[in-house]
Every structure is written in C-alpha cells, then in structure tokens.
Length: 512
Image (cartoon, rainbow, N blue to C red; front, side, top):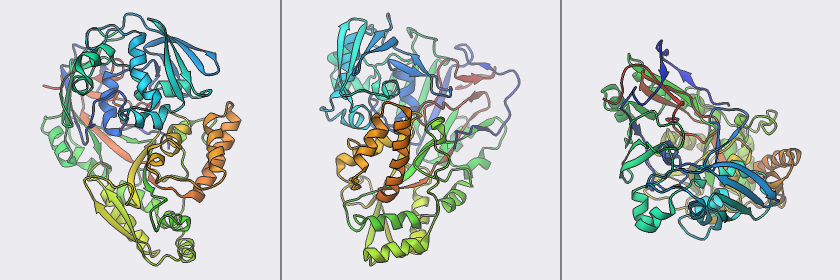
C-alpha cells in the first residue's frame, strides 16, 4: 500500500526545473474548497492550498523515506527537560503583511491551539495538539514549547500544518474574521484574492526567505463536477485538475495531457455511532463489518486500483511500525448472520448520512454496500443531507488520512479520547483495556512498547468495531504535458508540491 505514482504519458525530452521565467501561472480546478483559509484548518480540501501559504517551525523532506525532519521557521531545537523543547527561530523571515516573524508571532499562533479553549481551535487541539501546553517566549528569536507530558512525537506534531505560524500584528490590526479573508503566512506564495469557498489566487512572494516560488501565480478554483474539470482541462481553461476517478482515465488519453495516479495512504471509512440504536450493540457493529465486501468495492468502483484494508495501518509507516503479518480483511456472511441473531436484530433501520460529492465514489459505494448488507438482513437507509446529524445518524462517511508516517498519524487523529468523534459522544470504546493500550501506543518512550501496544490496539479495535474501513482510494491528477511532479510521501494526502524544486515543466508556457 505504498503510494504509487503512475505516469500515463511519457515525459517529454528536455524537461527542466520550473523557474520563474518558465511559466506565468497555474490554474488548478479542485472538487471542494475549505470553509476557512485558516492556518489551523486541517481538512482534505485545504491541503492543496494551505501548503503554499503557511509554514511550520519544523518541516519534513517531502520525498524522503524514512521520515526526515528539517529546519523550517526554526533553525534548531533541543529537548531541555522532559516536557520542554527549546527552539531557535530563523532570523529575518518576512511575513506576507511585511512584518518580520519573531517569538511573539509563534506564541500568538500556537497558544490557542495548545490551550484548546477557543472554539475556533478545539478541533486542531483535540485532533493533534492536546498534549501541548504553552509557548514560552525566551527572547525575540527563542521559544520554549511546553508539553503536558513527555512527547515522543514532538517533531511529527510540530511539522503538521495546524502548527503553522501567522502574524500577530495582522490579526491585531484586522480582527479575526477580516484576517482570515486576507491570509498571512511566511510561505513562497501569498494570497492576493480570496472568494470564500470558491476561489483563491496567489502570487509569488518576492521576500520569501528560502528559494523563490517557481510560478508567478496560482489560481485555485472550485469545480465540483468531475466532467467539468475534465472539460476545462481539455479546452484549455485549466492547467491542472484533481480528484479524477479511474473510470474517467480514457477521457484523458489525448495529446497534450499527462496523468498521474496515486493510491493515497488514507481510508475512506464509515464511522459508526456506538450510542444510537441498533448499532449500540457491538454484535450488530461487527456484523456490519463482516457483511461489507471490500474487494468487491475495490474491483467494481476502482478497477482494482484502490487497496483493500487489511487493518488500520499503512505500509507508509515503514520499519519498525508496519506489521505486514496482520490481516483482518475478508467477508463472512454466515458469521454476520449469527451475530445479528444473537443480538436479536429484527431489521431495524440503520441510517447512513452523506453530503454530496465530498468523497469520490462515496455515493456509489453506499449503494453497493446497501445491497451487500441486504444479503445479511441488515436494513441500511441512505440519506443525502446538507448537514450531518452526528447524534441521530448511525453511520457517517469520513476519511482517515495518514498525517505523518507513524501509527498515531492515522489512529490518534480520529480515535483518541479528545478526537472529534469522542467529543461528540459517538466514539465510546468499551473494552476495559482500550484506554491503557492506546496510551502505551501513543506515549510509550521506546519503539518496542509502542509497537506491541499498537498490535494489541488493532486486536481490540476488531472487537469494538467503531468504524468500517472501505478502501484506500486511487485518484488521478491530470495536467498539461508541460507539467510534472511527484507525490509527497512524508505529508498528508492532497498536498500539492508547487514549491521550488518540486515541480517540473517543459519550455512551453502554461497558464496562458
């Protein structure tokens, strides 16, 4: 299940690293847009754009395996006490509002996420940063990051986009709401036009502290329909389109277009409400899993290009955490029927709510699963809604990406006691060993402790059945054949590598 980048048209001879003189702009069509252009936003739909604008104190080599951390807005860091890390900030870093980054900007950016008190930041806090306490300003170029307990994943968490740095002066002058309409970061591109939920236009930031951006301009546009994205690329309206399903690949086999396929380290998952009847009975939840034919979904919807999950883990973890011997996949209708009989299930409706178009093939997958479950006697009702009712719905569609190459990079973010579903009261694991096993997997101070605990956690999760893993989706980028790039393997899915040294182009211009 490693990321596989498949070029379906050959690279033209003589391609070169994209330089500012080589191209004027790039027009990108995306299926969804973030509701807010905030540095602490962590949804799938923000990933392609936020990476261009915001930066963190610690960064990762996007293409390195094993995971390699690099200096970002901090030039160095060291652990000075079990719960204290001292970080030296990079001097003379200009922000998009013209100010120079200092320790006060770092404290302003991170303290709200570390406290978890402000509703605007509680999601990022509970998902990633709940073990962080506060930022101490030592001097203008030195900060100390305090954690509640020793943090074995310090660099991984500090290199998440949610730990990005913005300008304290900008927010003080504009106010929170206005500041979000005029985003300020330290990245190689700055936002010059933002239409919330529809369009974001960026220009190269000439005062960027590192290598200058390769493109003069980036123009991201919301285009929800797959057909419209493809037509726009073919007709010259766009230069790059994202989230194209495999069955549309034939429409892209034409001169002047290159495609890049990727199987993401991310589960499309159905989250099961463990409180609402009838799925509050663990036997019903286990039957729902056993009735789901993942291979049929992968073959029928994705042409065999997606991956069948064998357990809640990804090959991208690498050594020592990926455990290739674990395989919990497989359908068992007879066992599912036995569980339902033991639970006294009599065909009560099981509701699944979905919003339109967010997850590729999401609607089709739901219809297929509905038919699969009928074989077991499960009565699945599908509801398309504008807003999910997390308390009433038995099932909601979700994605569970790998945010960093570690077991907790996928497990902790959605299934910890501070995660969104735990806070909603719908994820309530009942096994008496769950909490202590999770803690050992998350906070163990040596590899063996964490690995052994995670193996046990996967076993316990099979009993809890709090979610149904569907597949690791395979999607296609399509672009003009003057453009090429590789998929970053160290960052979360959907990050677009449009920085210096990450994207290549032919002599021909794009964006004209």
